Image 1 (cartoon, rainbow, N blue to C red):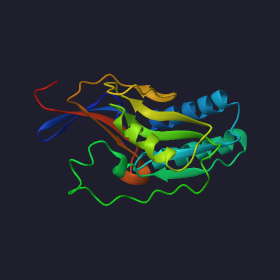
Image 2 (cartoon, rainbow, N blue to C red):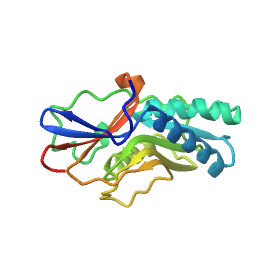
Image 3 (cartoon, rainbow, N blue to C red):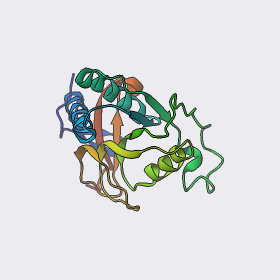
Length: 195
């Protein structure tokens, strides 16, 4: 059963508010796909790179949509940014092993759309840019995110946004995608008594 957006969900010690359901996510991804085509005047020389973990299924969904819209098969890569994080040196142990980066195309000369589920401080995107530029010299790099929650610490701005979500810094935004989590929805979580 789908839970309407804006519905408060109670879990022990926290309160969650659903901000997107499966239909909201589908519509947001569809809008982003059309905006990518419009900004790039088609899909020629485009490539999508999803940031692990949930950026990858979003990139796959966008590639399927671009195939429908433009009739062009846009290559998709997956990018692990673990070793490029600016906090890696302070936490080298206790992290899971890096997931395999898989970019099955030459990034040089491509118009890359980097895809992630949530944009927050900008540090993940900074790490992704470093990782991507180590692989070659794209013609351009654009950023597509499902949710932009604000609170940037670096001068990074998305080119394509599914939804802007004002949040407090202490809140946590969770995106669930069916490919990873078995369902599509987005939540804002916060400890009870803090709303």
